[in-house]
Length: 314
Image (tube, rainbow, N blue to C red; front, top):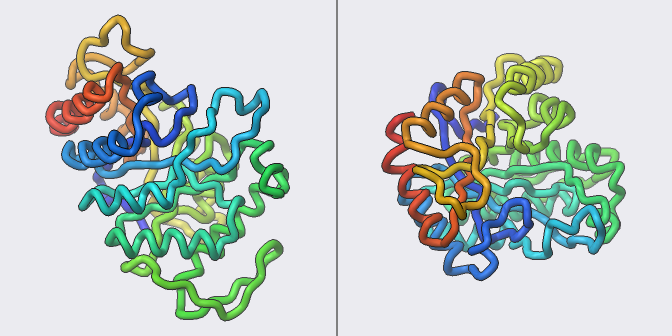
């Protein structure tokens, strides 16, 4: 187990803007933004005392009805996190989430082991099963096997840094006496698993160090956490601790302007902090924050307001 969050503590971070232009996440100003704004946001997040930044993962967006809202702009997570890691000093770097089935597990281990080495053990491997069937088809991967592929990838990546040369004998991947270096300086890579339903929660308990939410409501967390711990016990991991993520509603610190894109967690720092403390009460300790804004500078102001006004209340 490799926990990121210390016992009794909580951490706060963001999925970066700009790096994807999917219409469900983007604010209008992002359409004209690029690398300079992306690095400025990462540095502003670090300056505001946030603990992690995240980059999404898609490779080949199909031109179909299911993916119509997704757009085609999705920055590569490893390249982007490596670049941002060189531009920052302390903030952790999260893939949110890496679709494990799209790569051989040795490729994943090499990429994230190197990223961790280059950035001083700041890397968190966030993984998921994937959900865009047309993307799987474009890559020649069987969509119905994505859960099984993810499970075996998790086992293989977890074992990749166990010794100088490693062997894996599985149903989908088979190799003997191969070495992966460099790896994480600590020797272990934190693995958070994303998903919205019971299959993901069980996978966290069996194989993960933490949970990445997909917008699950607060009142579902007793079920989520119970499922994770029951699955951990069944897998021989009784008593394991987990980093439990929650995704609060879209927020805006202050009185929301009339032309602000939709936001539901708005108002004073006290009100925002009260809601986040309620999330802590149900067992969450990793906060994936989402701030609305009309302009790039307003987004930076929201990050600063969180660090100056909200974080001291938590």
